[in-house]
Image 1: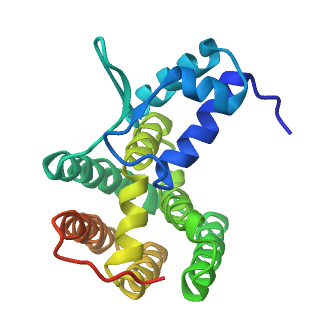
Image 2: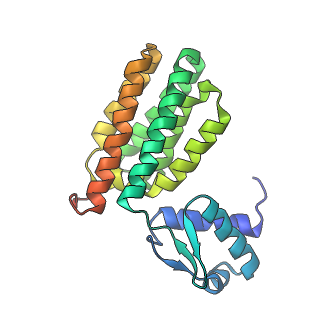
Length: 221
C-alpha cells in the first residue's frame, strides 16, 4: 500500500465525505475543527483544502475561509457540456483503435457495475464504476491529457452523478445505454456511438437539474 502524507490522508478522507454528502454545498470547512478531527496541525489541513480547491470541490473566500462548492444549475450544465465535447472526441478517436482486450476490460467493468446497480449494493461506488466504464472505452484513444481533463470533470460531477442515479429512477436506462455504447463500439459504429454518448451525458444532466429544482423527489435505493 502506498504511503500517504498527512495532507494526502486528510484530502482523501475529506473528498470522500464531501462527495458522499456529509458536507453539502456551501458548508464552511473550519481548519481548526478539521485539525482536531484528524488529530493533525493546521498545515496538512490547509494543504488538503488546497488540493480539493484544485479539484473544484472547495472554494476559498477572502477573510471567510474555505467552503464546499455549491454548483448552480448553469454551472452543472456547463460541466456536462464540456463532458460532451471531450468525451465524444475521445470515443471517436478510441473506437478505431479498440482491441479485443480493451473491449473485454470495458465489458468486465460493466458486468461489475450492473451487479452493483441491480442489487442496490455498493451505492458509494456507483459513480466510480460509471467513470471506470467510460474511461475504459476512452483509453484506446491514447490521449492522456484529454483523459486527465475528463477525470477532473468527473470528480466535479461525482456527487451529482450519484444524485442522478439515486433519485431519478434512471438506473435501468443508464444500464441499457452503457450496453448499447459497448455494442456500438465493438461494431465500430463511431457516429452512432458518439451520438448516443452525447444523449447519455446530456439527459443525465437534465435529470440532475430536475432533482436540484425539486421536480424529482422520489428516492430509489
